[in-house]
Length: 62
Picture (cartoon, rainbow, N blue to C red):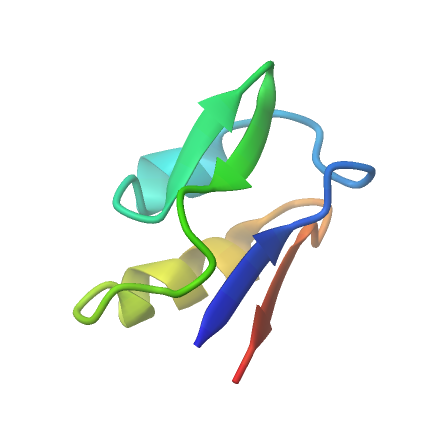
């Protein structure tokens, strides 16, 4: 499973970081994925971050 945050859509609310800090972090006031691949065991919280993103800036493939 791969994850990506669209920097053009992200508003920097940091909700995804609060929900899943293992996958997301803040960089220059925007959220980014720490790595392309979602680590085993973090899939559920990563999916929650995707669902809760207020601007739908997070995409998951696979």
